[in-house]
Image (cartoon, rainbow, N blue to C red; front, side, top):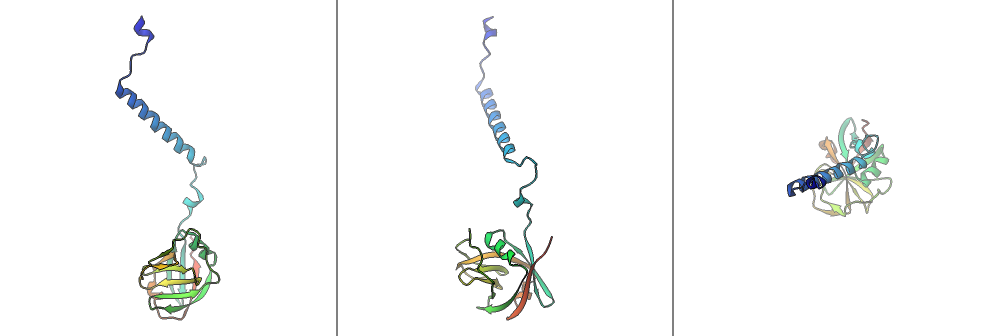
Length: 166
């Protein structure tokens, strides 16, 4: 009868399995608690990248804005009509109505061809036709998806920038 009073000792392997099972169950429970109770994705997860069109005469280029504070602030200015001018052969620039947010922005960047940027000290929009080396205070806004050749024409020329509604 004495053997019935005491449970049989657990092997080391069994203890490890039970411990591992408890850890896994804890992680599963914690991650379930972290999800919204409705099962709906967060507002940020539902957002799709913002697409814009850049209209020059009868031609249209399209671009995608990056997901950052500066690009979101730029989007609040749309629709926008600007005059783009040549600057240093490799970019087309225009003054914006106001400077944009620099919250959380990098110190600078090395833009590639087709990149839309904001030069913070001057408060302007710069569209790069060709890549350039790193420039401090140059902040990323987005990237031309189609039609960079439309924007590469010599300036000055008028451009209208507007959202493409999904």
